[in-house]
Length: 357
Image 1 (cartoon, one colour):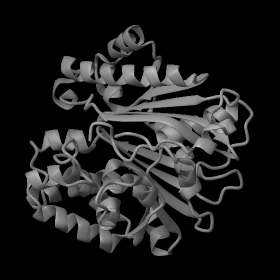
Image 2 (cartoon, one colour):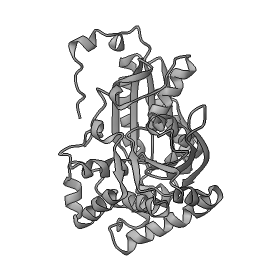
Image 3 (tube, helix red, strand yellow):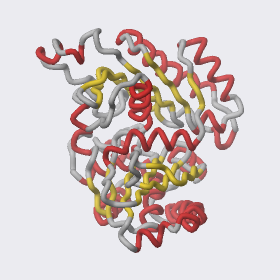
């Protein structure tokens, strides 16, 4: 997917000159390898280059306990592209993180050393708590400060993180509790042998996720706060953004229309029911899903369904942002910059979807 070419007057602005320091962030998940490079701009930042590719690093990890050679080669190939873009853009500050696949794999440390040798990138494996904090930092501008509590969740490839948030804290939204479930779209699809369509297997996934959230719910009295209308919900993941795009009936994915979209639970049900009527080939060919997500989407829908059933907030905010944006904001703040927002308007050159789709 090619990026939009900046207008000539933009090219002459400070944003696209060497005088503004460039920052880069890489988020290597179980399913995707993503990179953003940005420069500070008017209290926020603007993306000057980006990359995203589905690599399925965690393919087979649940069963074998190791990263496979094929998955490693796919991932290193993507990371080499990231390194080349970062080098060409002259980024001075870089942070690269890896999540569930590397946390779980017994050869995770060996993989990180190989990445360093072959791509010159220093990847660090972060904990679920750090992952949740970075996601919150990246998504915080979308939260409504007038609602006291928020549930932010990220349905990943190898895990699902749910964060219980104090949204009215004077210093900005604060995570009060975090749970990381060892269930994501890749692992669930593998665990259920690809049979994740609406039906018995779909409901089995819903039940699995719901039972996994029970203790987290009880210790934070989340259901009680939901019943009082005190909770907002925000979802960030390929599942949520895909459902948002499908609800809007987009002919192709468009981040500017999806990021910040308020999606009613009834709308989610309609889209999930529609997905249930499509066969495997139709999902692969859908312009908002694509051939590299088609076999994973229903597992993600089941996780989302479980979250919505347990906490019937009524609507959720869709976020096409997360860890990478959180990293960029933190790096800039560490350098003494005043970064208060990273809004959708600051993404004129952000790719519409993963590079290979």
